[in-house]
Length: 324
Image (cartoon, rainbow, N blue to C red; front, side, top):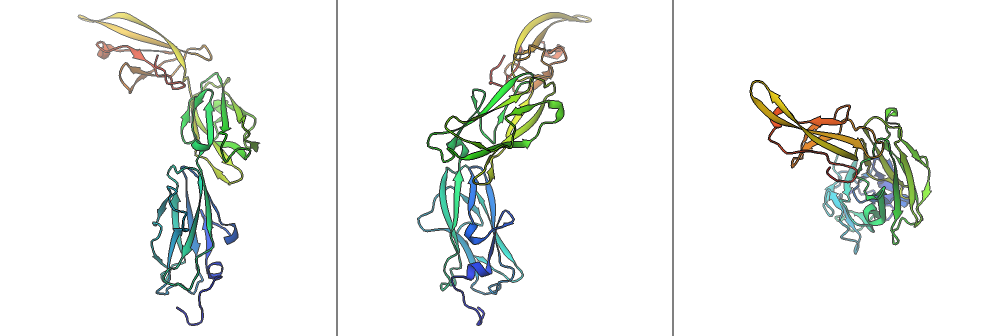
């Protein structure tokens, strides 16, 4: 250690600059706000520190005493001593929540081989587990950010976000924002307009997704921003298509010269919402999870001669999981 410098309580403030996900943060403002399937990078920059290269300058990150056990995953692991080696200017830790439950935690840095140096200022953190805090419905079906939902061409749908009675998000401001905005050809509109700050009361907040004028299939996504914590959820992916249909089936006797007689199986799909024939709907053979064909412009598909011994054709309605 330099004979001209001794560590003291201000060493952390003077020698180390914290960054969260690459953004500089003042020590008094340092806090980690994480969602349940989230990660962040916490960096200590020490570019001009007199501790660089000191044989005792090994940093560790750890929970404060009594704050252990929150389901977080750290890389490098908590408690590992990492050298402030010559020719380095910073050290970084990645913190992953991996589905951890809602709760608060506290971290700190230390240089254990320099016992005269106090530990760093506290690094407080908070985990918000959206599945634990919120009830999220697409129409009447339960969905989750990070998952998917299946809106239908020619339909109107609702997305409702409602805090549970014990939720820490009750009466907190949120924004629903585009994760990936639909192209103009999808003709999807959402009301109220996205990006507006809304208060999550017990009644929750409902947005209407209008796909009445949509004729093209495609994907888009939505995310929930927690305004107070400055974090954004994983995307809810919405796959727009004919996702709810009724079907008609019939068979026809077929003949192939010179002496092959076989039965062709047909299926016709009609959109429940628009009443129109449903084009490009995936069709499976009964008992198979692989797409056999897609319906044509008339909403129809049929087996060929190679499938004459197979079972009937069927369609999985992704909107509600029914098979028709």
